[in-house]
Length: 477
Ligand code: BES
Ligand code: ZN
Ligand code: ZN
Image (cartoon, rainbow, N blue to C red):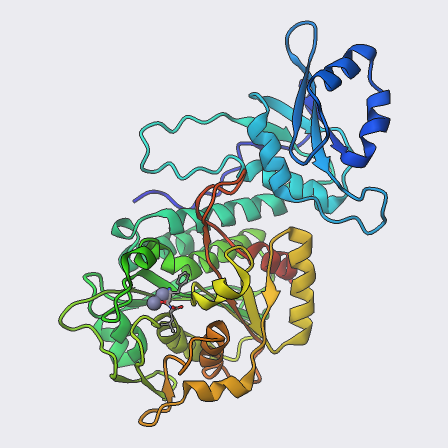
């Protein structure tokens, strides 16, 4: 199997100073005139000739007499640089710069604040991401950034490696990323960080009471399983991450139409997110007792597939009527959440590609999250803004819970209406977590539908940098 866990340094980032670096001068739109005046006459003509307007990501190379690049002007667009509360600079601006400049070693001339220095390094590094496992030709241009002095290269590297792991896992097709493979990747992650891992597989799930996980996954060739990783100081605050690991979602007997099924290798995106975030936490050595729970299944069709109308008794004890076999994510998650809750973690987070309705509400790039913990909510929103890692809260509106009622079981796995589908899905999950446990649920798309610098089409990590930023300050060791 491809080695997914990479702890090496980021090839495109260097710290310290080296002499032969090419300066990149960031020019905000409103500073263009002033900056222009500081240039020689020749340079000013060159600027005019190229119609350089300092729009965001616009690049102009200045060539020295010997033919080498003397310096690079990079437009920032409107940056509000004169205001005190300056907006963060998006990392993707630096991805665009890294992609546009010729091979070489660069440095940024402007003085950036700590946040933007990290953003620059992250964006620069991610510009070099390419899922090339299945390509014969893997050659790529490497441009190196000598990071600004105030850049926390370790912190950034944790985020780069974690995001890369997440993307790689999502991008790998199900033929090589089934429930068994997800188990193997988890084992190698555990081995790397000397974490404990147990995996309950197949019929053993039934014996232990994880009936929803077994039921959803039993029709697939690769047996369903529950992956359980624990790491860190047993006495430290308990942080538990739960990730939806549906390695492929056909929809089950309520089969998806082909265009909806096409991308469903990404339905283990939640698992990829918690493994990526878990790697960041373990690399950083945060002072937490980390637990990662992944119900890994394939929602497929066979003679023994679960059916609409079936009733499952969950690990929690709640009986669930199956209204739709395509609402399988909440089923596998509910047993994992109930197990997680048994030890009263200090913080319980789950990530899942749970609903299409979340996309209808907020589009592909803004994952909604749901929590009743107000301090976590406001803390996370500010980290999200800082990291340029979009997230937005949606309400756990309890009156909608009745939409999940069943006349012959305690709950139905789907609501009687599709409207508010992301909320009803979140309320379903909430049923399995005691009110006393701080819990947050992220409904992520885990995918870039379109190509942008630093964000190629394919798997994407969403929200985990915000969460890591939050945890890293709170639980610094
Ligand atoms: N994996 C899908 C949700 C999904 C679809 C996420 C497309 C991202 C993009 C999930 O298992 C599902 O099929 N959900 C259904 C639920 C419905 C049957 C209540 C949905 O959202 O349509
Ligand atoms: Zn589904
Ligand atoms: Zn699904």
